[in-house]
Length: 183
Image (cartoon, rainbow, N blue to C red; front, side, top):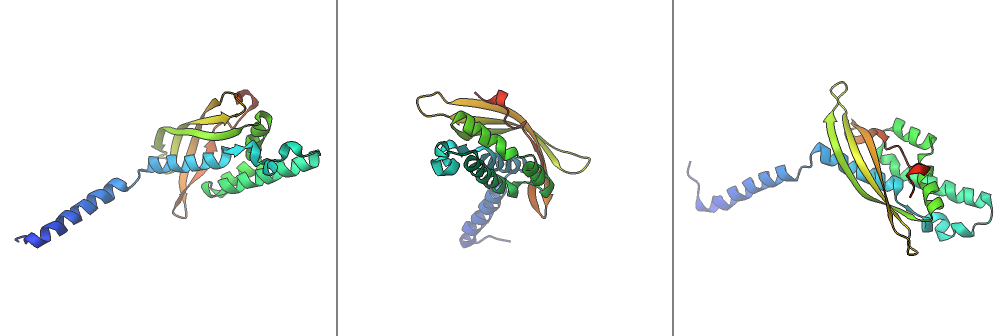
């Protein structure tokens, strides 16, 4: 079969499309890292100025502060929900994990940003077909007021599997923020 000169550009376009398509597919590890980054931003990124619309310090009663705390906890919990399997989300909510972020922000009067999430190890669990990842999380505590910013490094693990064709986390453990982690 002879190629005509006019069909050569079409052939080049077809080959380029195939090669480009192969190169743009993210690996499962990249997809896990992206999922984890989105989750950690939803879980940890909060500013003191966001609490009670920037008026947390002005709240007089513990009931008002409790309401502001509850609203922030609900907001974080709703933001993380799409990343978890139902059971892990229920555990996150029941254990009030979002509250640890809020307490850190209130105590430090700062803003927390996710500086970096790195997947250190990622492999398939042959016993059940899920994937396990070990990661390093860096949280940046931004203070303003001429105070130096601080970085907190946490090690964590995830287990990821599909639910209705969508990758979600069935387990996430980073030790959460503890008072000993705070700068």
